[in-house]
Length: 438
Image (cartoon, rainbow, N blue to C red; front, side, top):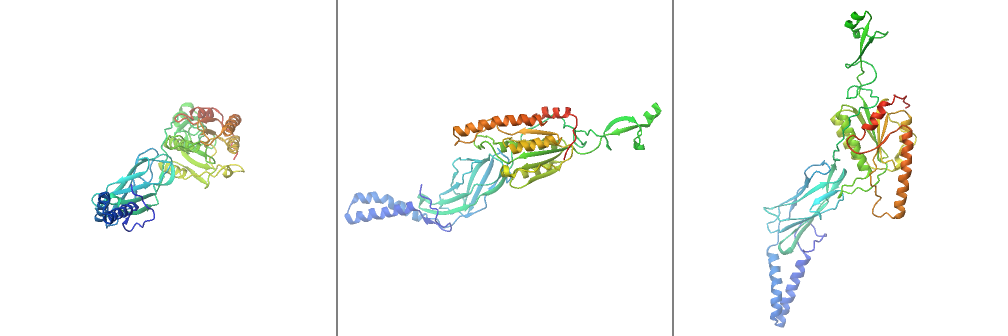
C-alpha cells in the first residue's frame, strides 16, 4: 500500500511517494534504453511508464467534503451494539479507495478490531462505518479518526482529513436486583414500607379507647355504641421512607478489562448503587446518593420517581476518584431523616472508610455495608512477589477490620445481585429502634 503522508494539505490531490518512485524509475529505464540501445531495459521500463501514464490520466480533481460524524446514540448503554459513520460528499469518480484509521480505546470494542476501515466510493459519496460496543461506563470521546483518499494505483492522495472524535456518555448496563425484605424501622407510607408511628393518614392502624387530644372526627361510633366507651380509629403517618446510598469512590481496586468483562471495585460499586437505587425507586421510596472521595462533591438529594433514577445515573457517570485525602476528616454529615436506611457501598480497603462506617453505626442509624471488592482482585500485570504478598496481608487485615465493624452493629454483605440485602434487612428489622445521634 502506498505511504500515507501526514504532512499533505487536505485541500488538493498530491502525488504519493510511490508514484514518484515509479515515474522516476520509468524515466531512468526508458532513458537508459534509448541511450544505450538496450531492448531489455525498454521492456523492463515500459510497465512502469504505463502505470505512470495511467495515474496521470486518472488523477482526481475534486476534493472530498466531510460531513460531521454520527453515532447511533450519544448515550449508549454498556454492551449494546452501536454504529459510527463518517460520510464524505463530492468524492471524485476517479477516487478508488477511502482509508480511515480510528484511534484506539481500551473501553471500546470495534469490528474490525484493528480500527482500519477501507471503503470504495460510489456515486460521489463514501462512508466509513464501524460497528462498536461500549464496554465501560463514563464520559469519553471515541474514535478520533484520520481519512485519506487514493486514486487508482495509489498514484495520488487527498488528505489527511482529521476529526477530534465524538463525545458521548456511556450508561452502565442495568443490573438485576430484587429484595423481598422490608426496610427496617420505616418512617413513611408512600412507598411499600409502612410507617411504624401513628399520625394522620389513610391506612388503618387500630381501634383504641379515646385519649385526651384525639380528634372527634376519629371517633368510631359503632364501637362506642356497642361498648359504652369512646373509641377512636387510628392510622399510620403518611411520609416517604428514605434510602441514602453512600458510594466510596476514593479508590479503585482491581483491573477493569473491557475485552474480558472484568470489573474493578468502582465498576462493581457503580452497578450496585444503580441497581439498589432503581429497586427502591420502583417501590415508591425516596432515594438519595452521595459519592465520597471524588474530585467534585457529588450529592443527590432524596427524591422519588423515574426522573430521580436518571438524575442518579447521570451524576454517577461523572465520578472521578480523588483518593483517600478527599474523604471527610471530621465526621460525615448525612443530612438525612432519622429513620433513613443508610447503604454504604465500598471495597473496604481503606481504614478511613471503615472508620466512617463505624461512626455511622455508632450514631444508631440503620446501616448496611455492601462489600464491593471483586472476588479475584488483581493489582495488575506488573505485580511481583512482594506486591502479591502485601495484597494478601492487607486482605487479612481487612477481614479483621470487617469483623470489628460488625461488632459495632453494622452488617457487612458481599454484593451478589438479586436478594443480596434480604438477610441483613431482616436482621435490622428485628432490632428495636435506637436513639439516633446526629
